[in-house]
Amino acid sequence: MGRLRISVMVHAPVGDVYKQVTACDASGALDEDAATKKYGRLLQKVDGVHIFEEEREERLRWRVTFSPPSRRVMEAADPKWSDRTDAFEEAASGTRWTVTWHTKARGVVGLLQWTVFQFGGRRRAMREVVQPVLAALPPQRT
Image 1 (spheres, one colour):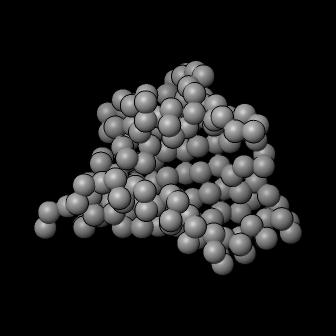
Image 2: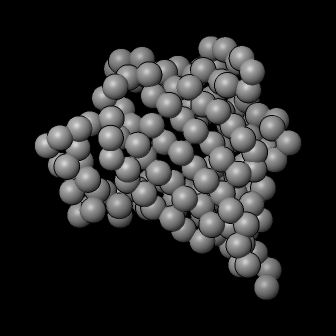
Image 3: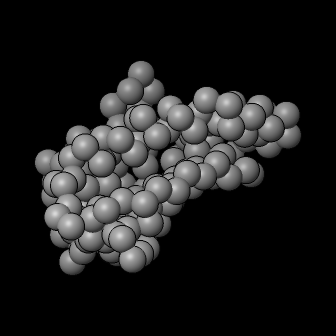
């Protein structure tokens, strides 16, 4: 199982970044409307673990564990999809946000995924995952 990772510095407090990325605030309260848009329909919640079903051609289920304000883990039920971990660390100028995808592919397929990520996938992840979060956060005063 391979890991694909991006890490960015966000000039905003950890709690603000965590909430924007996860739809869950630092106290653990989930914004249900925002969560539905991010993850799909909430099927159940047991001991802090949320099971969501995303509407696609095939129904994709996510097991999401929130550990505010430092971590979110998304585990895909489908073996074709990668799991994802978001880590949030306080830094001098804001928040260090690290996104790690844990691919389930092995061998040649895993190597191909890693290669594609290095040569284009990383830019796509920045554009589709990171930029919307940065654009949604209010500008920080200096």
